[in-house]
Length: 115
Length: 117
Image 1 (cartoon, each protein chain N blue to C red):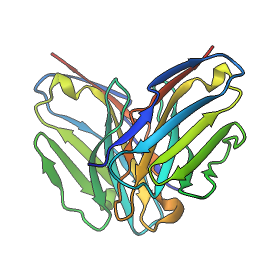
Image 2 (cartoon, chains in turn blue, brown; image 1 turned 135 degrees about the horizontal axis):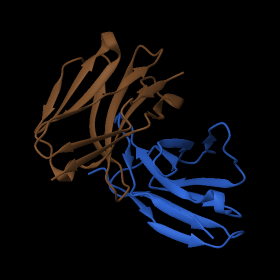
Image 3 (cartoon, rainbow over the protein chains, first blue to last red; image 1 turned 120 degrees about the vertical axis):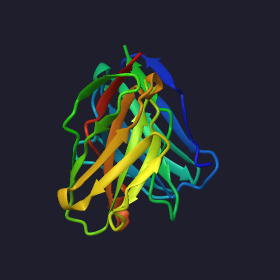
């Protein structure tokens, strides 16, 4: 149980375009979802926390208008990278937790390359 | 503020050796949770263990064991008789226990473990 699926696994897009990444909890209702960014050989940096039906809470330094997060249902959150630039190239990974469970479960991650 | 320090950036061992990954944390919360995650080359994070701050009992799961020492704010992870499949980046993480923004995890920088045949 507690499976989180992220799609796509990798994506290449042109500079200036937008890319949407989906994060789904397959067998539980996720009260909270988290989006992280990871640069090569570095740790995970939290970008934002989202609760179903409410606006995401962004970490300091993360541009809300650039990284749009939508948590429309208890099983789906999306991250849209708008007007992507090469510096947005990174590994993006989501996690989800459900009420009563201390640990969060992670998706497979999405490797974004902006050319 | 919360902080997790994994002083070992990279460790290389030969198969069957035992290896310990260190984790030291800082928090002002009286209740908190500690975690270890494994990130293989494919990228996904695999949950290994959670430890509550009020439970200092050490845990063993197969070849894996964890040593939680509140007195030294450490939560070290030992792999016994390492195998090539253990090669991965291992992250130690911390979160507060009272909910709200405390649900977010603070990660260490990770330790890259390479097990050579």
